[in-house]
Length: 192
Image (cartoon, rainbow, N blue to C red; front, side, top):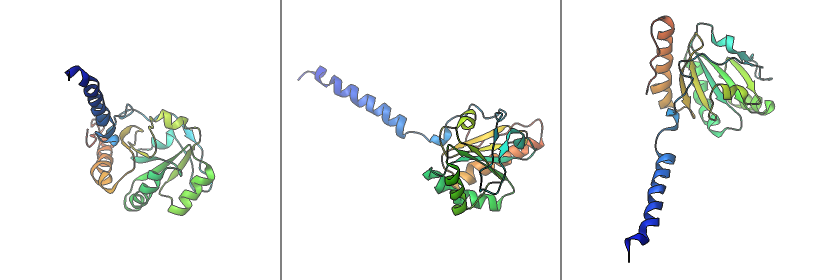
C-alpha cells in the first residue's frame, strides 16, 4: 500500500493534536487583559433592589483604597461555587468587594444573595452587559483588583479557588496597596 493513502489520516491527526492543545492546554485564568494597568472604564450602575447596598460607578473606585470587583450572575454555576470563598474573604480581610451583577434578572440576583449572603459593599446591575464589555469581561465569574487610583492591577478569569486567593489574589491586593502608597512603584502582578 502506498504512503499517500495515509496522508489524509496523518493530516487529521496533526490537526486534532493542535485542537487538543488549544482546548485543553493552558490555564484560562491566565488570559491576558488589555486593561491591566489602565484606568477602569467610565460607568454608572444602579443598585440591585433587595441587596441592601448601593450601586456603584467609576468614581467609587477612585477613593484611594484597593478594592475587588467581582463579576457574577445568579445563573452562573461557578459563581455559586466561589460565593462561599467571597463570603470568607469579605469576613477576614479589610478589602471592600464590589459586585457587578452581569446580565441577570433582578429578582434572581437578589434571591442568590439572600440565600448565600452578601459579601459585597456595593452591587451594581449591568442588565445589558455593556459595562461588562467595557471591562473586557470574557464570561462570569471574573474578579478584578483595582488600585486606589482606579487602575486595574489584576484580573482573575473564572471561579476563585482557595489556592488562587492565597497565591494570586491576596498578593495582587498587597502589590496594589504598595503601589498605591508609593507613587513611583508599579504594581507587580503574580504569575505575570
